[in-house]
Amino acid sequence: MRRFCLLALLVFSSSTCQSVSAALVTYTTASEFFGAVDNAGFVTVAVDFDGEPDDTEILSGSLFGGITFVDASTPAYPLLIRDGSGLIPPMQAISGLNFLGSDVLGLFSDSLALELAFEAPVNAFGFWVLSPDPLFEGDVVLSLGSDSVGLVQSANADDDLLSGGSTYGYFLGLSDFSQPFSSVSITSSGFFGIAFGLDNMTYTAVPEPNAWLSLAVFFVALGIARGLAPRKRDSYGLT
Image (cartoon, rainbow, N blue to C red; front, side, top):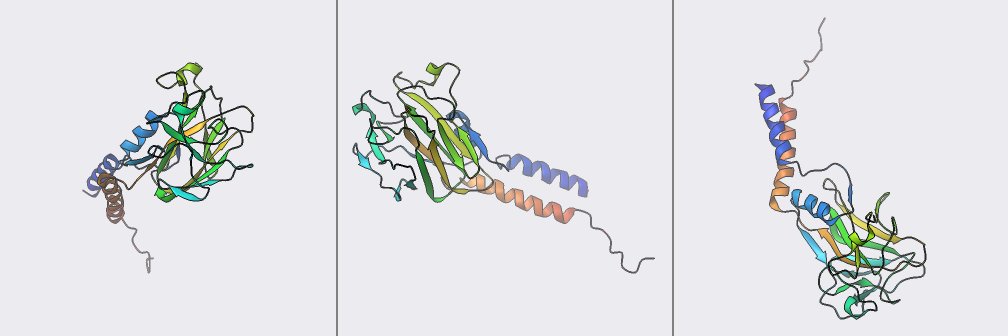
């Protein structure tokens, strides 16, 4: 009977807690990232930089959209919200018209070092890299501690063009559904000549009730399973 109960609890807990991951996962496609977030029962917040006038500056160390932006680049970049339709050549955004860029042609280039600190710990973060030209493997890197994921180019560069055909788009993301994190960094390679912007920075908000329920069921089942496990008899005084 004990074995049957234990098996039932393990099956139940595994079926209801399949969204709980024990390791950091990285992503290079938006579909995989959002699919994983949805399966884990989390909702997301997107910082798309829309609703602000062109050339609005986000001062280094200031909070915007639930994220504190710190520019650690040398030399430093002005962090400017840009309207892509007014640039030459025009740039598409993921949603609306705006994205995060800088003062030289409206874009970042080499040696960007941007640190992002979240107002509250998150379990997943992802964003888009936008460029008027194809970028190459690892030109832009997203890092969490010692773990990182670099930009990946499709075998056919034109496959990376956004709908409309004037801007190349690349997605980077990571998640850890077992342990929230408080900050990430975005860096670019030191190769001269790349130009890019950042858009739709997306992070997880407070989990939906089913995510909390899954975690609660898992730990309750674990506690019951431990209670059902057979205990060794004391050996005191035995001969």
